[in-house]
Image (tube, rainbow over all chains, first blue to last red; front, top):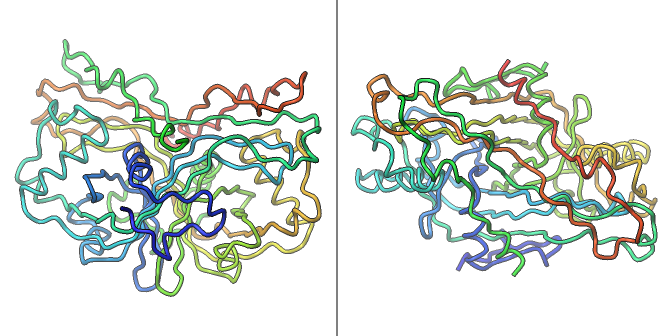
Length: 223
Length: 223
């Protein structure tokens, strides 16, 4: 179970807190960018990073030359937050305007994955998280590329989700106001694909590119 | 000018760093969710929050009853990061897979806005940032609602942007591989609007709802 602890318990609007694994995984598997927070000599940084979930761990990666990655690889305490924006909530009153969203916040320690096999498996997971089907249709990392990549893993031992869904919650007295109210749903949508200018003739875009879409975890959030 | 300081200078891949105001503002004005990082007794938290830019300051808000808002209102040092995901970058080599994105990272101190006029203006900016045109078509905050809302401002004195655009950067030796390569553009797109179930008859969705879209700052990023 994602551990419900004092720091992962949702206190404001506790009805928005979720502590089950299915909700957590659906959010992490749909998201593409994690915001990773950590402190260096008391200074807090929040950096956007790609990631992938592999069972009960989150994988992060970067260049072995990166100061950030070297810092994190020392076993830094980090807070990883993934947020999916699902819609804008328009109430009759400005006060009750809100956003529908699903987010996961996780606390823990980043540890480097150092063995070559584990690193290779992690890089595959990272590519598959981005574009399912892509690892079988691209060149694997060379030994040199593998050595240049820092892979970190982060156990999902202490994570919780926070969710808002549904229509606005206007006060009874405002229901007769003449303003439109409701939700403008938002989701990350693919646009027209852009092949590289130097693509060799005869290479068609594969189905996993032309039919690209993120998994839709909103059903789980409603359940 | 957004201040370029040691902590806002992009070190890895310095070509991705941007320090001009137009780029910074375009990202902040298009984004909807900020990830706010801060430390409480050494523990780092990263929370997603709505925000708005008002000139050279960022506005945040929440309930006066929120522990978070009370902590931040004491003058906490925060790091605010806004990230827009623009696309998935598929190289022939897994190593060169990447994401196109635009992000802003800002450092500073959150200060409460306490005067009633300033608070009211800030709340208007927050609603207008979410849905331009909405303040004129919704009920303003009552005195009681105003008192229940904590508004924080954060000077954009020290902020920088980081951007990746364009196609993948495969090595020369990989160009002849038979894999498709290119970019899958991604953007936050509105879906079919969802009026509240109890909407009074005869209230049509206004144009600012039916034609909703975020400002498109990608042109500035390319320039």
